[in-house]
Length: 224
Image (cartoon, rainbow, N blue to C red; front, side, top):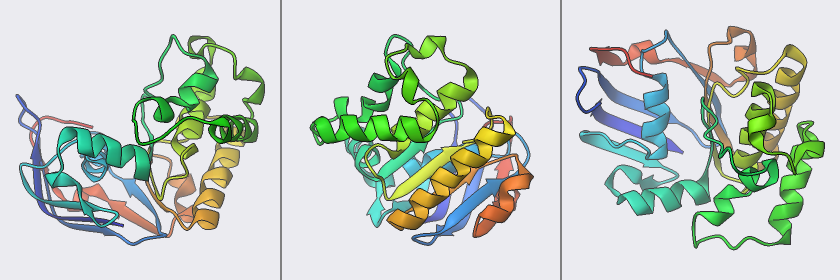
């Protein structure tokens, strides 16, 4: 599902450099990425998603060499193949919960919004306990509620790959376990792949594999 080889990435204007000689995630696996703050965990996820591209090396995701695609092609590839849960959620404050969940259908011509997507959005929201908040603007939600909106949005188009950056970081213990159950049930039922950054070592036993990003070479100023 993910294969990164001999990749080197540097942030423009900074000293940070992440070198990944070899990193692979097999289809259907649930892999946790751990490591100290600033070691490059989020950078690794963004390389796999094609949000970032390396200055050298190859990044393949779902058998597509995303590192060689144009920016627009990478965007469409992400929307059709990857469910992303960002650490900062990346929700649009002026939109309702429902419209934020449906956002992937509105930013590419590759997907036509229909009643199925609306029904699925409502079902996902109900599943994570925010079904009654679909009309509400996200600016009126708590951090934990925002987190759950982001997770619903990531699952909307039934992706084959989930890339999650601290997916339970803003949830209380009860909601954390509930959301993890939903994510892992989706992975199991859909035979999807999960790659998740986490600082919560209490959830690591739920993953098939744990990767310490410290095994890769990172130098310079700290970055995500």
